[in-house]
Every structure is written in structure tokens, then in C-alpha cells.
Length: 508
Image (cartoon, rainbow, N blue to C red; front, side, top):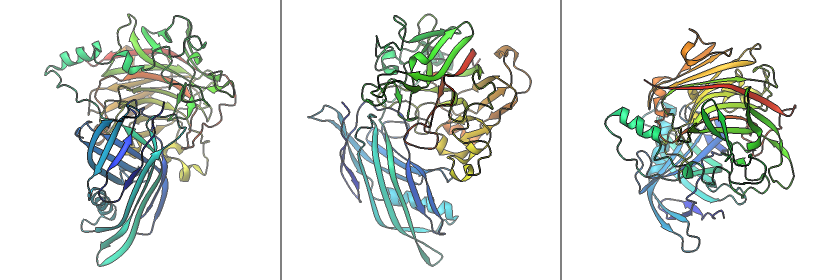
């Protein structure tokens, strides 16, 4: 049963009880963000609210950090609230509850520094008049880490003898990310550490698949005896990653709450031609009957059944846009992804606060609902780069830095492309390459790629270290414009992409 949230009120010093589930997921929601700055410019944007509980990274076990931001500024953190945190078990539900004791001046001081950067005036003084915030449960959301977040900060900024009003408000969905146990200090010898990560003793399947590999045996989504695993290119790929329990009565249990779209295990299959990913109608048990669903596979095990902690190295994916005929012709409401992602333990991921789920996106091929040359796109797209090209290489968290989304164009001719990602290590630049043909292997890469990008050194804070992440492939439809429901499915169903090759080579 989904736990209920207590109320959170912020106004100077406070004590807050938040009965948050110990089984938090890692999907991010957005809400309305407004800022009236001292120059009189009003920002009304999609924003984010996230609550981190320690320990995680530099956040101690007895501390919390609440971050709010939008997507029009360079760093997107417009407000941060810090404070002390204690936990206890509820006598009624047995859930972990959190008591938050915010630092009195933390929000005003942080916002003052933001204003100073925006105004290029290190002497600007922010005088707060009112500061309130509250958190309440999102009943019926089905997500155990979802809550509503309402924040209002008002005051005046004094600079050069003038006083000007300024305000910041947020109202929308929030995400809770629980703390994680501090990892043990790794061995001094990097080779020893890599061997330990590859062996995967700290990444049990029970943590990566909390509901089991085949959470609903007998419902027809996975072949009997398969454990929802497919064999492809020397690895075993899991198809039930998006099962979220029976708390989604309108959408069944196979639902991605961040993308607001269903995924059906039966929509992925393997034959002699490759790994088939489809968007097509499936009966997932929803009261409304069969409905369009996407597909996703996760590289879980080696061929012998041992955990496949691939980690640092070169990843290669070759894929064909079967239904569309060309990648430039991919339906507006379809997206093909290839990426690393970690869902592990109570916090949903063990990465740092810059990239909690250790996600790097080798491929996000989609126009995300925007037609080419749509005149309304530049003013409405989030981020505005989505108006350019039809594909992207992405670092996470993408909303933290506009340069983390690198858009490019795949031309009209190729039905088959090859994508390569070189992940060298934590805090080191990542190189992405895209080739307009198949038949390419890691041992015979052409001298020049059709599209390539290497992240800049100032983006190294978003490059994760390896731990329990897995490599994913998916074909999906989602809430591309921040809506609460999926966009329409592709006009032609079934809609198919075929992955014909996957290769990995560790960093030597």
C-alpha cells in the first residue's frame, strides 16, 4: 500500500514529518515555476522540485537538501533549502518517516547568491518578506516517491540605492530520493576494483528487480520459463523493468511514471534478424482493455547467468528504423533510446546528486512531438534545443545544464545507423559517435563519424562512476511536452525498430 504523506510547512524554523516509502522510485516530475526578477522580466517555465535525504555524496546522514529550479537559466538551481534530518519508524504503518529541521537562513542566502549572479552585482542584498512551502501527498499517483511541492519566496533586492521587489514560486510535482549507505572505500588498485564491479556481488538481482524477473507469471507477457529474459548478442536482456506493482489500476503494473506511458514485455522479441522493439496494442490488465504500449530491454546477465556489470568501455548499437524506413522519418510521437541507468536500493540509484541514476544517453532519437520547422517550437519546447535536428546525445541530469543536451540531425537516407559511446571513467569526458550505416564493429570503426560529440571538461560533474547501472534499449511514446499523459501513439501500429548488433569492449 502506498504510504500517505504528512504536511510540510516552511516558515523560518520548523519540524516536518514525511512518511516516505523506503522503496522510492526515480522518476522526475515537473511543475509550474515563476520568477519575477529585478529587471521586471517574468519567467513562467517548467520547473522541478526534488528532496534528497542523506547520506548521498557530500550530504551527511543527518542532513537533507531540497532543490528547486527551472529551465531558463544556466544552472537551473534557483533555490536550495538545507537542514537536519532524523528518521524513525511509524508505529501505525511501519514506514520510515523523516523529520526535517531546515536551517533558518539557508533559502534566503542561496537565493541572494543567485540574484547576485544574475544581476552581475556581488553587493546586491536580498531582504526576504515571506517564505512558505508545503508538501502533500499525491493521492492515486501510484508512485511511492511522488508528492506535491508548493513554495513561495518574496522580498526585495537592494542595489545601487534602489529597492526592487522580487519573487519566486513553484507549484507542481516533487520527487524524493532517499539516502544510501556510504560505499566502502574502493581498493587502491583500479584493476581490482573493476574486477569486483564486474563480479557484481554488491548488485543483487533482488535490488535491481524488486518484484522479481517475472512479476506476473501467467499473464502472457513473458514466455513460460523465460523469466522475462531474451538472449541477444551473448547477453540476457530483461523485459519487465517497467513493472511498478498493482498500484496503477488504470494502466496496469507495467508503467513508467516519469514518461507517463506503459511498456509491455511482449513487445520485445528476438529472432534471426535481431532484437525487435515495438509500439503496439497490448492487454496489460487495464480496465479499458488493450492499449498502445512501448518496449524496453535491460542488459542484466551474461550468457552464463552471471551479473553483467559492464561499466567503463565502448558501447556499440546498430539499429534499423523498420516501420519508418528512415530515422528522419521516425514518427513524431516515437522515441528510440540507448542508455545506461541504475535503479538500485531504497534511493532508486546510488549515484551523486548530479546524476543519481548514473544515466548517460548514447541515443535519444525523436522529435519529441515537435514537427520540423514548427514556428511555435522555439518558444514552447523544453529545452528549446528540441527544435533542432531529430536526435541527441545526452548527459544527465539534463535540466542542470543546457549543454547536456546535444542535438543533431540524421539525414533522409539511412534506414540503419550505428551508435558508439566511449565512457572512460567517473568525471572524464564521454565521446559519442553516430554513423549512417550498419556493418560496423568496434574493431573497424570508420575514420570519421557522421555526427560526433565529446562532452566538455566543465560537464565532468555529470559523468558518473560505475556501480550497479545496466544498459537499456527502448522504443516508447511519452509526455514529451511535460504533459500528464502520453501523446498519441504513432499513426501506424505496430511500429518497429530492429536492433541488429550490440557490442561492448572494456577500457584497456
